[in-house]
Image: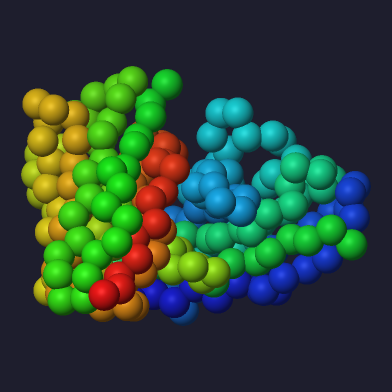
Length: 107
Length: 119
């Protein structure tokens, strides 16, 4: 199975900050990667698919980049509602595998 | 708006079989991949497997020997059965739809149901 390694595992940031989270795959996965946001007690929400595409309704402050093995989720200006845990998910092959998560906390 | 709702068995005894259903409303089961994902308390997400509306399936190798996922298109629901459960299977179980953008990314999720394995 492809291993997905996220970093950092947690970070502290302030409202308005630019935040970057990375995800590294144990082998090349083209651009077959998604990003999810999960708030406590809630189901994850899809933010990005195909490494850089936003589903309708996702704010434009979220962006994704990368291909092959290295990927990035960027929040351009952190908002109060963005404090959550973020996960990457590779869908290059089965079994689908998630990264370990990055918790974004208030500084 | 598509909505997914997991059934809620709550407590399952060790060695028994966990059974969950996910009812889909506001849209059709036809044409999509339907997935189960779980999350142990305080931990990360694990994909369990999918069933396509046609009935074809794919399971995580780590669970394959114990998992069955099935679909009922006439009733618009799909199901998960996990046999021989242990405490390690205690988790919040989510059902989710494969998105039309990318069939193995998930655009609609159920709220999740906590299943506790304990005697």
